[in-house]
Amino acid sequence: MSYYNDCLIKFSKLPDEIRNKIGSVDAVDKINKIEADYKVKLKFLVILVAIGDIEIKYIPLYLEKKFQLNKIKGEEIKAKLVKHIFSLIVDKNSKTVRGVEEKIKDIFQNRLIETLNGDEEFKEVLNEELVAQFLSGGELKQGELLKVLLDNQERITHKNFIIDGRPHSPSIANWLKDFIKVNGSGVFDNLVLTEHITNSENTKILDEQEKMLVKRLFLFYRNLKFFPESMGDLPMEQWEIIPIEKESEGMAKARTVSGPPATAAEEKIKELKQEEKRYGKGGLEEKAIEEEIEKEKRIEELRAMAGQYPEGSLERKAVEEEMRKLEL
Image 1 (cartoon, rainbow, N blue to C red):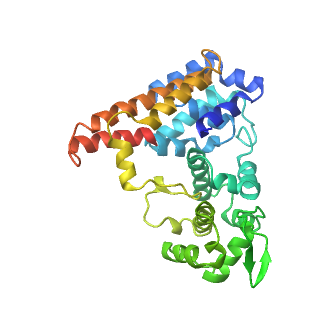
Image 2: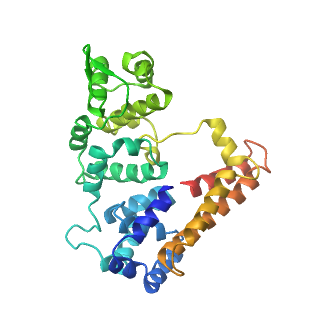
């Protein structure tokens, strides 16, 4: 199941009182008005806030990364959403619908393997929340989360795991303990990481899938412990704590500029249309799905258009840039 569909299901399971207030015809009309005024799509954002995946105070940052909207307009949209939508359900003390901090701590402690292996869209949302929290001095502290990570007892692999000649549980905590023992507690580069994955006696016996999972764990540890230095020269919109799989340049070109049909996009549209049938007419879920379908269709149109121009041409670059904005 995609992260998008997972969020819709979570929203559908919220108490009727909440769904009926922020998903009412009147509320949707108000969201439509704000969307028209600022030329952005907000319905999925409203759902993310309602289910607790994004805090209200981070709406401007989300809009900046998603739509390249400046902070002033982001604050204006946040104020209007709070006034017309979230004031109906928000906790007046915490200014949030649900406890985002508690959810993230639970992920770090009990669901990290599932997250490292999980949906890329969910990782993106989680990264946005973590980066925003760290930069703004929010409730989530790097040191606290690092301690939770280093104490995590989830078993990440299934083979025998040896430290100092003795068998131990192949837990996240022990994998990190072994890595730090061998490579030190300072920042490390990708060469050190690759050599460890290749040469460590504990990793040599793993299959490729588990090797990849362990590699993600070490990247996650580096990103978290040494943030923001661990981001190097990357632009802020590419900052991440949870590692996200990147396509190779060749794969990315094939996905973005190849001619029709684009199977992945067509499958996503098909999946969204099936999901749409689960919800009532005129509701917030249906409207959010319709917007996502239109976005996917537009991406397909641009992909076909890009294929009409020579590689490296100004026209093609302009079309590809528009596609990248939509795919964020």
